[in-house]
Amino acid sequence: MKTIAFINNKGGVGKTTTTLNVAYILAQKYKQRVLIIDLDPQGNTTSMFVKENIAFSDIVKNMVLKKTMYLKTDSEYSVENIIENQEINPMEAICSTEWNDNLKFIPAFLTLSRTEQQIRNTLDEPQQYRLKNQIEKLKNDFDYVILDCSPSFSLVNINGIVASDIVFTPTICSYWGLNGVINTLNQVKTLKKNFNPTLEFGGFFLTLFEKRLVSHNELKNALEMLNKKVGHERLPFLNITIRKAKDAEDMTYTHQPVYRKKALSQKGVASDYEQFADYIYNMNEKRK
Image (cartoon, rainbow, N blue to C red; front, side, top):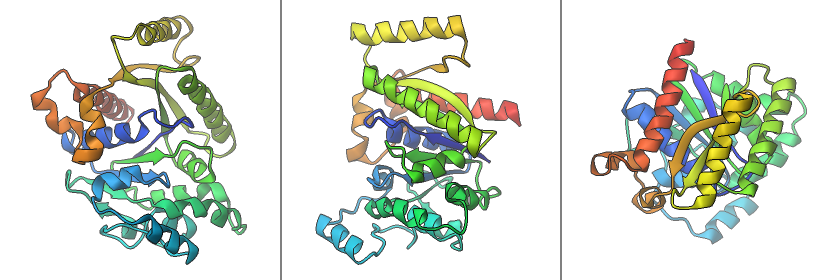
């Protein structure tokens, strides 16, 4: 089983869209057993699989009452429960999807934001390994576990990185996006040194790329040239680019992966996600 995290402390860079589409392609094209774990209190990944809307007042009420707020899923548990309570079997938090029988997910809700303080108050065991301990219980049930992390340096995210085998960072073509890459890379190095010696930074890649923009092309060309000059270890830039496309933006309304539209648009953004999924799958197969 390979555990992969998508993370950048800069928001709006395509983490969730990448997570969803890559996971779907691994399940659909390669028939892999894939589990997505939503680690973002915003629950954007979760909302893709659950179409029910919940009133904000109900969410606030449940936070005050310290009850887990969840939509209509297959399970009464969410990721916060399995992080906070190590006695809960993570299989009990897994939900099915309508996308593919091989694709499952563990939901996250707004109440995940309270988990930070909850686990900080737990001193009887290391705080950084709680998610890793739970994921290890699933090693015979899945081929891939993919973590959709929040744009922060939270303790929940630290749990995600410590639990991972490899980390990828999406970024937009901007200074703030690249700054997020640098911060993420430094965090990965620190966590690798202190908690996860086998952790690998797989690299960063461009998202929301617009070929018509000169600035985007100049940045991409500069990164490619520097990567060839200094090597992947010093500049871990992946030659994978996710284009900005209406299909990807429409996912929040259609609740469907863009790969399902591939037949209608062979050269669309679906092909970009397929290239990335192919890269991950082939890399993993070579290492077996």
